[in-house]
Length: 252
Image (cartoon, rainbow, N blue to C red; front, top):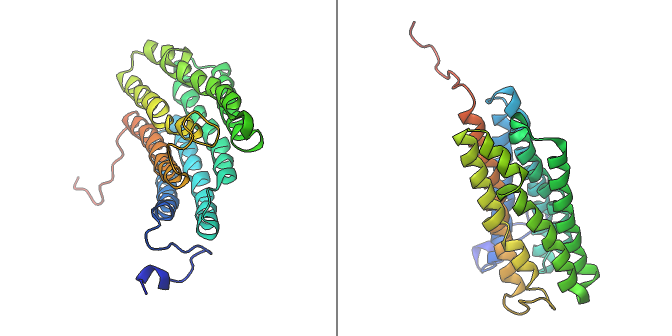
């Protein structure tokens, strides 16, 4: 009898020996929660105008952490992909990630039109993706194409559109560096999701990846994208905040 099989259930979930997907569900849930605590704490360590950005970063990882607790139980119980839970997570967290672009660019002229445009793109991407993966799977290619329009819209805004132009006109190298890093998260980090979508039955990459492998990539990608996204915001906020004095009992 191996050690893992003798462990008691935790919140109804039990990981089996060799279950690498289940392992990443556990790691993801705890990593997201740890990041949440860190980001929420940092709201008190940055200047006022950056507190909203840190709060949103914490909300993103908090929402993801809660869903990962549910998803790991679902996986441990059924051994199947928690598709609905994933989309509920994404439809809440991805628009919030788009809000971050507005918040960091607000001081440089970003308007609410940019905010709502990016939120609309994200909702189009996610709602169409969900419909193609669940309700209208036989037309998954069509719904995948519609979903891609939303993804490309976000990419365009970040790399070439108004968000990119605002950052370029800011003459702020720190902001420009942060925007470039966030842009790479959207381009490279988010690319795993449309690629994963294309591997579902009927998709262009049908049969290329097993469902278990896809969930493994999703779990790792979620943690890197959401936590990494927040860390870029944190680094920018800290660089714009006067260094606090943490010394205790310093000599006069």
